[in-house]
Length: 284
Ligand SMILES: [Zn+2]
Image (cartoon, rainbow, N blue to C red; front, side):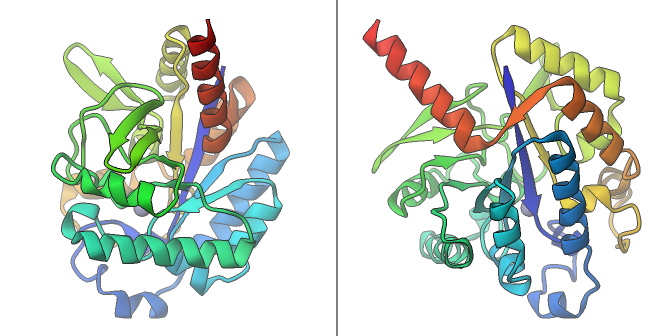
């Protein structure tokens, strides 16, 4: 069983919905951790000989013009995390199309590699914004990884667990949703961001084993800022403060332990295995 390892490449000031941070004219002047911590991630992956998918923010790719190529040349998959990190449900169809197209163009021009996947900022494809799937398909992408099938502040979309097909007006689109563990009637994530930083490693590993027994790969998602205990702190409500900054010193050792105990691959690789299995099933 190969699990799916992903990183959303953005800076500490791309935390969503914090007054002041969404003013893009301030971004250029802010100190940055993204290049340094992406390099740390690349070093860890090289040490464990693991390939991952990097959903890169177009703005970051443009600001650090060698970063996408470095990621791609290390054998990882490069994909889009939008250009401006705007939530899908706050945009019109046209704005979403233009933002997505711009991010894809930047990454493809820098790497010479076709971008196949997209993850929405803050998993912000919600019920009512299904038009986003049509645009993702229309623009030529081959999968989406934006759905978060549990309640959350800025997203959440009920859907099947594991890789599955979505129907769009332009044809079917594979979806790689976030992994959600059930606890009674509650669903909670355990394999990314603040949840991975907060939960003890043994809980996370137990959930991995549960997913393996069900034949489901776990999707891990982390950001460079999850590896940056020294990142600048911003004012925010206390519950968000906790979620944004808890366990920052534990991410690196937790990731290394997971890489030692479980097998991981990229989204595109997991998807092609899934599609091959589907074809085999149809034959039999
Ligand atoms: Zn993001």
